[in-house]
Length: 387
View 1 (spheres, one colour):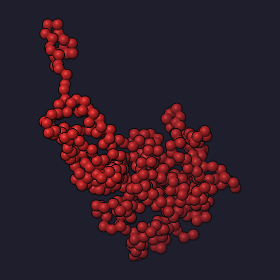
View 2: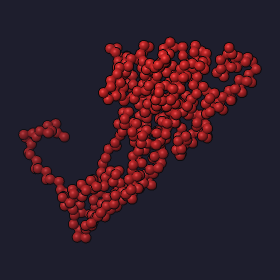
View 3: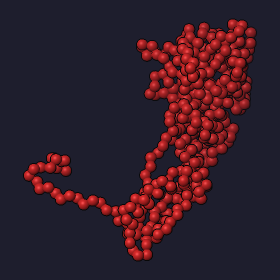
View 4: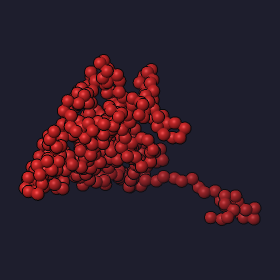
């Protein structure tokens, strides 16, 4: 490239005009159609539709986590002592007139897994009690003060607009998962699996289209007329336009070609067996399960040998996913229900069937410790001292 490009120097001789390009096809015509990957929108509505509502793996994984947490037996402690008759247990059993405790906790953790955020509001009820209500994440925005600290929730549902105060004197609670690039909003685990989620959904749609149209892979058209002629420019452009319009896209996958005038179809792309769609789907399903913290064995995904058996995978699921998330949620709800800080809602590990083998092993070890008193043994297994 000359330094004077693109301006021609007055001392140089003008070059002859380049003749227009002319297409010639005299025996072989290869067509290659480019495309770009299409990704699901990374907002609550997109994740909910493409993930929870249309993908069976994501749907089952989210329900496994949410239902497992909703089914945990709860206990209440006040100033370190267990209170079986604490009003907070009755509130968690029936948070509001529309939902039971299990429904409330399942929806709350569904919001956390799909949106990365969950919003709870307390509403005064009759008799000096309160109700707990969930707010849909896509209808809530966090309002910050002049220093950048969150001070309220702005809730919008249709024409309804309300402002819910946060903090010790407020009636709102914002639960969020860690987000490395946001100060106040959480990061959805389902968003981390978006590439695998779109791959899994696209493979399902593609396979369905292939079944509907008697699958045919991509390839090339060979033009070999008997008289040895070639395609004209108009014929070339028309053929390319017809192929792009009628034979591209997942909805038209495998549609048979109608050929005439010396045209022949030769497959050049990989067949569905070569591409191994089933293994690609299983790999994407494992990535989705990994992002949501569910062992693939619990979802029936083949090819995973991380755990020796189903019971070990279930125990790992509770230890690594269910209990940590339940612990942080119950701690936040405790502070919302009782602003004094004396209440602690927690789960009862003795009532979790998946952890029964671990509890039995702990009881045997503690019971065999002759150097401990009965009161020390009770404390070692999680029970308080006798009154």
